[in-house]
Length: 316
Image 1 (spheres, rainbow, N blue to C red):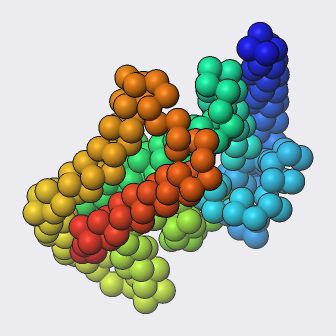
Image 2: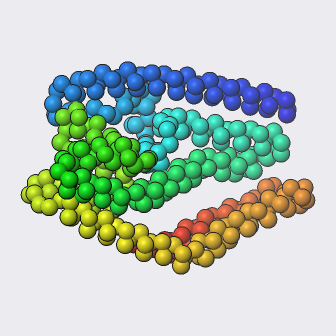
Image 3: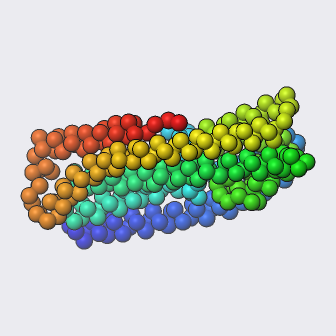
């Protein structure tokens, strides 16, 4: 029985890995070919379609995936996190990790309920990683944004255009700010107005401070005004918001740590008892009532964690 399960695991793993490798190579080659063609077409066709020319061409599998529920949400989360992977590739990785955990644990313990719990936990880990990368990238962008606004204001004050100021940011600042402004500058070179190319970044940057900047740019492009002075004041305001946010993070640090400890402690104790005393906790996996109690406990832990996060996450 164990040998059969191990053979199934090896077959599933190798098949998934091969499929993922083939799809990844095909996606990159198709993206490069179609992107070059569309950039050339957009550069000669004017502004009608030029705001879309830098978007990668999707494969047939990705177009099918886009029709599924929550596909747009998942694609946006992958984009906001900055992880260099397609939505299809992310789902393949998630499915492979989940299947690997289920097969290995089932081959070890031969318990379907425990294997399903492990598979669900492993399936959630890539989404948790996406959320971590998204928050880290957003925090880094928020730290870089005041410097970017000051650079734009100084460039405008020196007599440069807004497009030249955006190019300077793309060259001087690291990721993620440099990459975002570089994309806006590339779209501007293909015929899009620089104000429109910056506004098109709204879907890629989930930042309220950046929305303030886009509003200022849009109003200035329509009615004019001293943009450099406004950007200096906006940069000062954003720095003040960042300072207040840091103070709030320090004050709520104890609450956040308490939430992590309260969630992790029961899980660690349960896992420790299960490994140190084999058979002692088997009743939670063999009897229906104990399974329901265990599920209710897990649900309560998750609900409590989100309640604590809601309490300590204070909007600034």
